Amino acid sequence: MHMLFRTILHAWISRLGKRLGHYDVAVTRFRVLPTDLDILQHMNNGVYLSIFDIGRFDMLRRNGVWQIFTERAWYPVVASETITFRKSLQLWQAFTVESRIIGFDERAVYVQQRAVVNGEVFAEAFIKGRFLKRSGGTVAIGELLDAVGPLPANIHLPEWLVRWGDDVKLPATRAEAPSVWE
Image 1 (cartoon, rainbow, N blue to C red):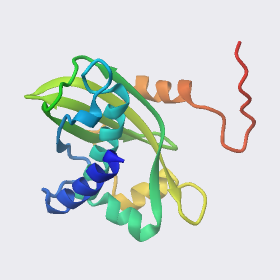
Image 2: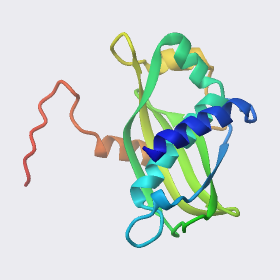
Image 3: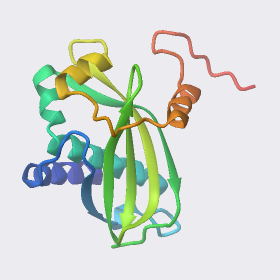
């Protein structure tokens, strides 16, 4: 429930925040709250991903992409994500989430996000996202790029990230996916 309040707060803050280009790095400020802690008294690993969700939402609002999605009745969903931890965030510690779109493959967009304290990376995540239409179906990447503009020449999707996306994907939603342990 506390994430709902944080999301509402950041939705309001992002309306007032600095406008960004579609591929700029968005910096969103946070503080570790008591509800973020696990039994070891540092920020719970799952909370990072929830806070990164808010960071992506803030990025999409401030770079104008959210408005484009709203006008076309599209919405983003996470297909895959991976996170690596370096240092723990402690109670009341201030940190920022840095978010940027790092590229596209033929079906998805990739976002890189970092939890940063005083310029030092504490955790880093990579998210593979898809876009769905409220009327049904998926938004093709060509259709998405037509709406938001071409990818800048300086944006390059790392090959390892494309391989990762392929390696971790599950069967399509209409395909069988039995839970069988080998």
